[in-house]
Structures are given as C-alpha cells and as structure tokens.
Amino acid sequence: MNSANFQQGVGVQLIRKRGTSKDTMEQVNDRFLPGGRFHLEHWRNGKLLNRQDVTNGITDEGKKKILDLYFLYSDTDVPDDVTEAVYIGLISTGASLVAADTYVSHAGWSEYTNYKVGASDYRGKWTTGAASGAGTVSITNGTPITFDIDGAGGTIYGIFTCSGTISEIRAQSDATAGNKLWATAALASELAVISGDQLKITYTVNA
Image (tube, rainbow, N blue to C red; front, side, top):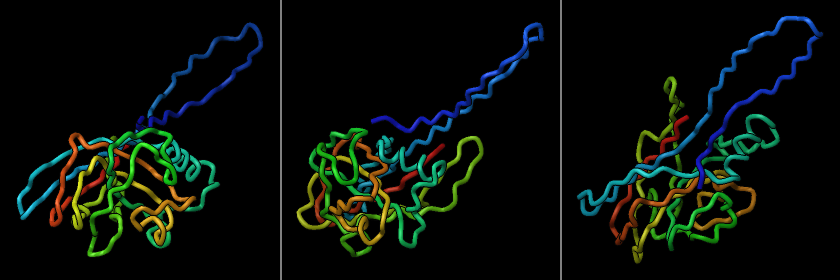
C-alpha cells in the first residue's frame, strides 16, 4: 500500500505579442508528504517482550477524505471528538493490505477482537494534542493506548486506524457504511498474545 504523497502544482499559460522580451519564472515545488508510524510495545507480567515501529500505508478512501474535507468542503464529517473521532484497531488472520481496502470491505484481513481498552470492548480512541513542529510537522497521542488482551489470545498481524461516528466505530468489528478506513500497517513480525498481555500503541503522523 502506498503512503500519501500529495504534490502541489499550478499550471500557467502565458500569451505575449511578438517582439517582447522573454520572462524567466522560478518554480517553487514543495511536497506535502504525510506519513504515519505506529510504535507498539508487547508487555507480559510487567516484562517488555517486543517493541516494533512500523510505517502505515494510507487507503484510497483515506486520501479522498483528506482532500474532500479541506479543499472541496463536500464532507462535513470532521473528527471533532464529540460525535466524530479516530480509533485504532488490531488486524488478525494475515495481513494482505491493499490501497483499495475500505472500512466496509477488506477481503485480505479481518479484525482481532480479543481485547479491552479501559475495561470496555472498544477499539482504542486516538486522542492527540495539537500538531507541532517546523519543517516536519507531527501529531501524535502523548499517552499510549493500552490494549488489554483477554479471552483466547491469538495472533496479531497488524494495526489500522479509522474515523467516523463514535457510537459506531468504537465498537469492535463494526462495518457501518459511511465511516472511513484511514490507514493500515503490517507488523514487522506477528505477535502471539495470551490473556493478560498488554499492547501499548502510539501513532504519529508526520508531514
């Protein structure tokens, strides 16, 4: 899956009468390159077993959401932390991730659900501070999201982020149309987890 690589461009046509001098125009070319990274820690009985940093790919519907929100104003569903928000979930049963995956349909993988966040059967809410930085600008959750593994445990292959109506997307395995799958990432190595383990996840987006 590709990362978002947005390049700004302007097309200009200059028409001039014959015999006039030729102007020289310098082009300023700056790329907007948002890219996300998950930091994951796997803990068991207070001992750190595994630490991974993985880069996500952004889905086609995630790219469209960004452009429609900011430039077209055709999408009013902004993650405002009141009715709309961003949540993080876990990927199970392999991780065949493609840009065409959507919130409703992702044939190459399924969601891992043997966990709780804050004692509830919810995905992890991505709560961030304001974006900061110069040159490279970042937004992140300062406090890691803790996923408490329960039930039969299992194997985790990846991570995803989604946005939409809080009452819908916070629920594990929700696939309500209209919500968006923003990004997915395959872990560098799969994680075998058991009940009582904890996964602590930080998600950072840079541009």
